[in-house]
Length: 169
Image 1 (tube, one colour):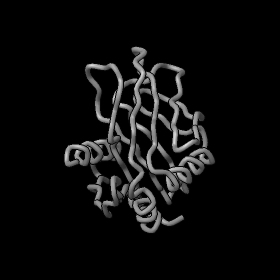
Image 2 (cartoon, rainbow, N blue to C red):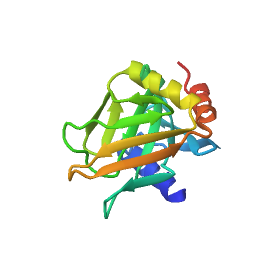
Image 3 (cartoon, one colour):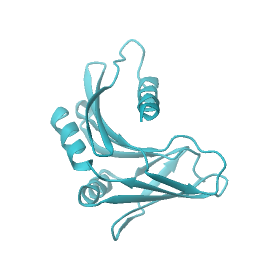
Image 4 (tube, one colour):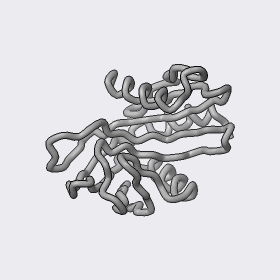
C-alpha cells in the first residue's frame, strides 16, 4: 500500500509545477479506496484511488495499475474516471469495464491511460461503482497481451463522499 501511495503522490507531483506543488494529503481510507486532496496554484483538487485485487494476463513485466476518480472544482470538472494500465495500450483499442451485469465499452486509451468518452459515461460508471461489489477491467497491450484486472468496490461510496465533501460542486 505504501508503494502505491508513493507512486500516486509522485505522479500527481510530476504534473504540478514545483513552485505551486503541495503534497497530497490523505483524507481517509475506506475499504479498498483512499481519498486524497491537494492544492495546485490555489485550487483544491480531490481524488480517490485503488489498485486491483487481482491482475491477470500472460505478461512477464507490468507497471503499476490503478484507477482514480478526480474532482477539480475550479475547472468545474467532477467525476473524471481514469485508469492506469501498467503498459501501453494497443492503439485504437478501447478497454472494457464490467460491474455486475453492466458492461461499459465507451472508453478511449492513450499511452498507458484510459478514460470514459464523456462526463455522462463517467457518471454512469460511478453510479454502477456505488452499487457494485467488484469491477473487472479488460484491456489489450501494444504487444497484443490481453489483461484482466479485478478491483474491489468495498469502500467506494464512502471515499467518493469524502472527496465530494472536500471538493464541492
